[in-house]
Amino acid sequence: MLADFGLAKLARSVRKLTAIGTVFGTPEYMSPEQATGESLGPGADQYSLSVVAYEMLTGRVPFHGDTPGAVLISHIRRAMPATSELPGELSAHVDEVLRRGMAKAPRDRYATVSEFVAALTPAAWPSFLGDERAADRPGDGLPVVLVVDDGAANRELIEACLAGINCEIRTADSGITALAMIEAAPPDLVLLDVQMPGMDGYEVCLRIKARPRGELLPVVMITALDQVHDRVMALEAGADDFMSKPVERIELVARVRAALRLKALYDKLDSVEQVIFSLAAAVEAKDSFTERHTKRVGESARMVGELMKLPEADLDALYRGGIVHDIGKIGVPDSILLKPGPLEVDEQVSMHAHPVIGEAIVRPLRSGTSLLPIIRHHHEHFDGTGYPDRLRGAEIPRLARIVSVCDAYDALVSDRPYRPGLAPEEAMAVLHRGAGTQWDPEVVSLFSSQIHSINALGAA
Ligand SMILES: [Fe+2]
Image (cartoon, rainbow, N blue to C red):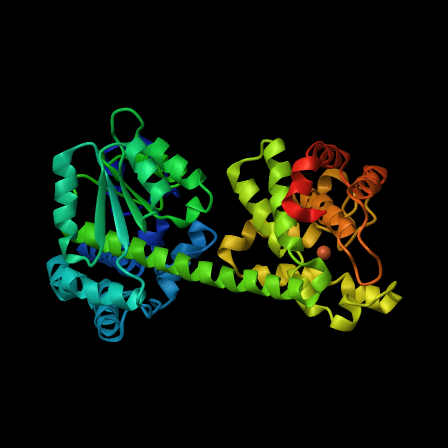
């Protein structure tokens, strides 16, 4: 039996829950001697504590893997990855302390946990944080932390704990108030109490995460009970982190700091996404005949998604996917893209590569994952004769089937280098004729039912 430091006590008192050979606990926090089944001493706790400190300071655990076994092997064999994202001097200090705390052999670690904590303390002290925040968000104003708790005393306590962090603190005394505040002006982090009258913290968290791009707003849940069940509930509600009451100042400061770093990273991803959207606009601008095409595709695709009662996350993907679906055309030569007339076979091959090129451009974006099926499959045909994968019917991702119809309609009514745009009713007739062969008949029928609103988008 292997037990991590957090659950070891539970394991001892509830022996029947464990069995020989069972990994009980969280491998990410286990020491090498736990992983190999050797006898455990105080050094194992110090190792685990070092892992927690590493995670609080960097926002990630030092060793991770696809399976518990892979994680355990990393603890035994791999050197601790450098805490390179911390500012220079702090990083060197933290690295040195953590490396000793996480030494593979217990005899190479600090003599006591107190000694380890004393060595690390200057790194976790809040006075360092203001400078770091400024470094993380140059010229971008203070990060905003929203504290949600029904108890005034708890809100004040958290506010006092965060006094050393260079951030703006807002407070809400209920879930409903918090959601309204988030809607009006999204914060950078939400510290969320679980037990509140009316809407509890889990529900509030679910609603925050269900908002468009809600996954990019970190939520730290504060649970009154230190129970595994509460933590599982928090994770299922989409929380990014959790901590227990009573809140310890140093722990809270470290967690807030890690969460704000995560948010700064998300914000950077957003800027990358902005670049991608600018690229999409550049692709559009290459062909003056398709001015505003992609925006209209995004808007009409979202409209069809609403009719299908798709979740908000899908509607968001439809809008963004409608805009960037042809991003891969950036890899198609202008001589082919703008050719006034039918394409030769080799030119067609080049043109048909654009969904795959587009997918490769957007794949590195974390926030672009939901767009990939749209980008790759927007030229598949319902009867399996499209490209690039010749998918048919329901094999084609639903969002791609929607964008495909919206894209085709807008292309048909727009002027092209080799032909003027069709009248709306002629374009609709083309879609109806192709329903069941090129396009999903259900999507064509829904699209057709909304044709007046879609034409009002300025497509015609
Ligand atoms: Fe396309």
